Amino acid sequence: MAKFFQKASVQTGFVVGILGLIGTGLYIWNDRSQLKQDNTNYITEISELKQENQKLTAEVQRLETQLTPFKTFALEKYTGADEEVLRKSADELHELKDRMHAFKKPIASAIANVEVTIKSEEQVNTRYVTQGGYLAFVKNRQSLLFISNTQSYARQTGKGEVVYKVDLQMHDKLSVIGKPVEILQESDLIQIKFNMIPNNSHVITGKASVVINGDMRFEFEILPQDMKNDSIIVRDIEQEFHKVRETRNRNP
Image 1 (cartoon, one colour):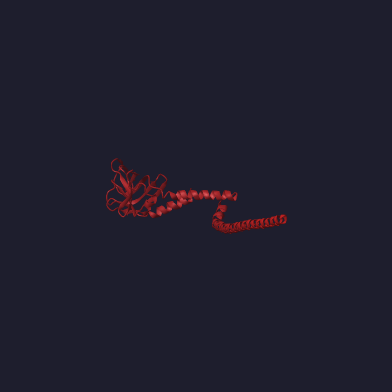
Image 2 (spheres, rainbow, N blue to C red):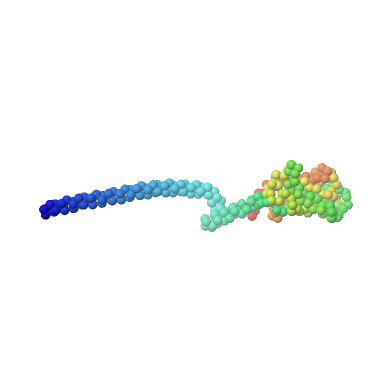
């Protein structure tokens, strides 16, 4: 009987041992499977990171290629360390952008000074308190910008010529307020009128200086012409805008 129990105990121990080994094996197998899966995930992440790094490297090379002319220009114009040179050039580009942005700014104010010389023997040297004039940017017979004044000046030169002058300003309720300055470039013509200049007079010469928003000055030449009724016409508008743009590009 004792031998039977001894044998049974041995068998039980053997079975328990076998089950323990199986359990350990299953644990190890499961652990290795998890490690394998984790390793696969890591490999995938590393591959994605490598691809992203390649893209970033290509982008850096592209940017360096694009910046090469800019860097060359900067090094030719400025002296000092590369970072300082590039900073100075970047500042200059920002200033240029701001100057060009002035054409996009809304019109808030406008003043003008107009001087016209006509052929006339009239003996005059006076200020007309209630007889001024106006200047208008016109497109399709519609006024884009209208500036005026009720006073003007006239003076005989002694050479059979009379010089008329007027200072003009924009009024607050015009529809052009809030529209960008560059809209004026679309004008077909500038129409100028002096109330005291006789109709159909012969204009010898003249000039009109227009200042928009206090810091943009346009100088329009008034060419010799025979007036049509009471109007003096300036047509070369776009060229003056181009000239102002180029000047602002060159000068801070």
